[in-house]
Every structure is written in C-alpha cells, then in structure tokens.
Image 1 (cartoon, one colour):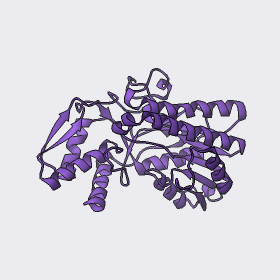
Image 2 (cartoon, one colour):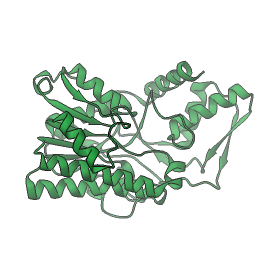
Image 3 (cartoon, helix red, strand yellow):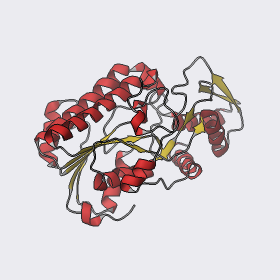
Image 4 (spheres, helix red, strand yellow):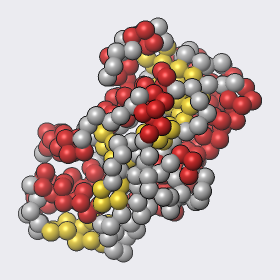
Length: 316
C-alpha cells in the first residue's frame, strides 16, 4: 500500500470486525501506514447489537475514525436459512454505531455496504446511480437492504448534522482467510473445499448449485483493504462508491478454473433445483479511481492461485 504516514500516524482508529475476514487486512494496512492507535473490539467483549456495548467500545477507543466492517455475512445457504438474523444484526449494528459516533462527534465514519444492495436486474456494469432502481435479488435481499439502510443514515446525518460518513459498495471478496464452513462460505472457498474433498475421497464428481450461467465479479481481499484506507483518507462525499476489480466471470468458468488449480479432474453436476442468485454482477469502478485513486492490482488468476495455496497449506 502507499505510505500515508502524515495522515494515519496520529489518528485513533476503531475497526469493527477487525478479527473477521477483511478486518485483519485493514488492520495490517493501517500498521504499514504507521497508524499507532488501532482498536479492534473482540465480539465476546463487545456485542455491537447491544447499545451498551456500542457505548462501551467508544469509551474505550475514543476514535477519530471508525471503519465499520463488522457484519453477519455468508453465501446463499446462510442468507436463505437466517434472513431475519442477517437483516437485524447488520441493520442494528450499523445504525447504533453511526448514531453514537455522531453524538460523540467522531471525525469520520466509513460504512461498508455490499453489492447485494443492488437491484436483482441491474444493467452491466452496475453504476452507483442504479442502486435504487429495483428490489435486490430475493435470496440475499434482507442482508442487502440492511446495509442499504446505512447509506440512507449516512446521507441523512451528513445533511442534518454535518457528520462526515462515507459509504462503500464492495463486490464479492475472496482470498486467504475466507470462511470454510459450507453453510456460511461464499462460492470460491466452497468450490475449493469441494474439489479438495473430492480428491481426498476419490470421488469423480462435485455438485454445484444452480446452472453455472450467472456471472460474478471478485475482488482480492488485500485490494479491498487498500481501497477502504484510500477512501478513508481522501473521500468525503455523501454518494456511495463501488469497490471492485471491473471484470465478469461465469460460475461455470470459475468452477473450471478452481478445478484446474486444485487438480480435480472429475466432472461437475449442476444442481438446478437450487437457486442461481443474481443473474449477473459487475461493477462500474470509475468513481473509485476518479475520487481516491483506487485501482485493483491483483489479477483474478493470481489471487485465486494464492487462495488455493492458502487452503492447501492450512487445511490439507
């Protein structure tokens, strides 16, 4: 990452979700930029759904900047199984954190949204102006809408209180450290695990949800962390900003690529009784480049290879 010493070295930064998937990369980026005061609340000590815990975390951290990454997240299985939890947890954490930060006059609040907030049928590439032009894809709508509420809150608070809150819309993330639980994981770690499990058990096929036709865009986790820090430093406007890599790959193409990298030589059985999710996903990434100079550096092939190697070293 670019050395932003003059900006970060005297800042107190609260990173919620700092022990999750994305959080450690953001914390590492802050350390590289010589941020000396980083507060990462542990979930067992601060349940951010509880207003008392939110107030306690602010008393203990006294931040200049909040980077709010804490979230209840997962793939299609998790979203379909626990839509109420996904809505409530994500909405209440964000709403309370933003409100208390506003009352304490925190200098800046960085809220993370999700590509799932976009309407189910959005023209490719997804432009920020299209965010309100329809209802999200049904399987992850509660999660997407909970995050979208935080955009409304940040904009309302800027208008009424002059509160400096920004809202970023990252696309699907991947990389070392991702969730491996089949009930909670996203498509890339799920596919990697399926392939290695099949090799280990001598199976000649794997089952994958849907038809393979939907497309997705993926952003390497280190690149996303860099985008967040650049935006935290340089972006101070009410409008949401996409964070992505600017490419599109079908689930079938992705599956074939994972099979090649893992060495699985069997076949794919497409379970068409299961949902595909959103038909297509790819973000317009021009605003992030224009506003704070972010361009993803990691090619998908390189990032996917690193992720497969991480899985091999950690789990096999």
